[in-house]
Length: 429
Image 1 (tube, rainbow, N blue to C red):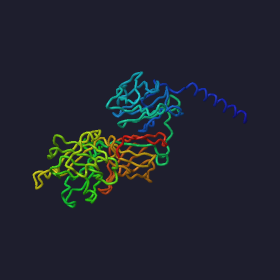
Image 2 (image 1 turned 135 degrees about the horizontal axis):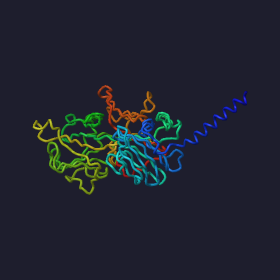
Image 3 (image 1 turned 120 degrees about the horizontal axis):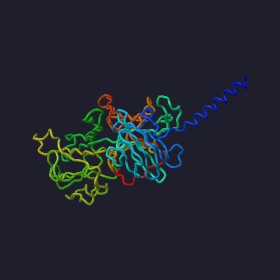
Image 4 (image 1 turned 30 degrees about the vertical axis):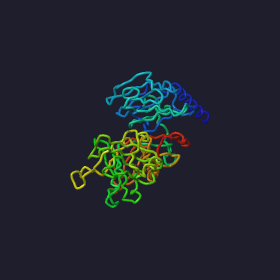
């Protein structure tokens, strides 16, 4: 009896092995829209580095959802320095929206999978070449990707040709190397009146402009508000004339403890309400600020100024005071664009950076005990709560009693080795 059972089991195993061997991993052409929609799509980067067992290689299949909401699949043809792929993107009706073979994505370039073009402003991923051996497919603009693994279900079932990747360990247990998101606008407001008693000046404020889903307008919140502190009394160099006759002002660390190597240089050759020709914002090294702050009536020459990219804008006001008892604008509003909120595992710290200029460093950071995949970064009166598993970014306004706002911000996760420390010699802190 036992031998009979053993024989039956052997026959079943042989049949199953024969079935599985006959059913090789489905090809690019066999992947259906249902298979793609059942894949575990995420905002996480896909590793293409040499020598890793789970990295992509020639023949790998990647499912995706584009920034415009279309689903598709790509087949890796080759992935040395340049990436060559075949792709098929579906419309919402299930028909093929675009497809093609041999799409070339050059090293460090981006690619739009909706149309199968390289270098588009509506890119879905960045072919990120870090070194000669370290490479990634980095999702962009809210697109999501998933590396399709070997089949665990037989063809003929309803979808599910490919098994999803194994769930990741909680991010608080095994943090990524870094994460970042881009805030469209950050504004610094500052009072120019150094000849006015400190108690009569406006507060120094940092404001955020945060996009919200389904809304054309952005949420505007106060990030920090610095009270009338004595260290602000000597924030600018002393020219031969003061506000409102000075044509240049130097702001040194208005939030105290953040700026070590630079100061802001504001040029207002003809101060006026709102904007005026010649308005500009740049930075100068701390040594330049120190040498000019003593004041000899001279202004910092252009040769010692360093441009900020993206270029910030400058307005003077406040506009509601125009026509009142004060004849000239006394507040400056400096708006920085495309400001990156970044966190790094190697330091455990977060910062706000525009181009090569770090506006704020060492922001408050903690992992939420209620959700091990959510990190909380607090730059001031509110916190960004970033769920790395879902990609959801919320802003909690503690100044408004903990009001939670869903945002349309996109988080980019670098899940590479955490023992790599970035080399950033060009940054101004």
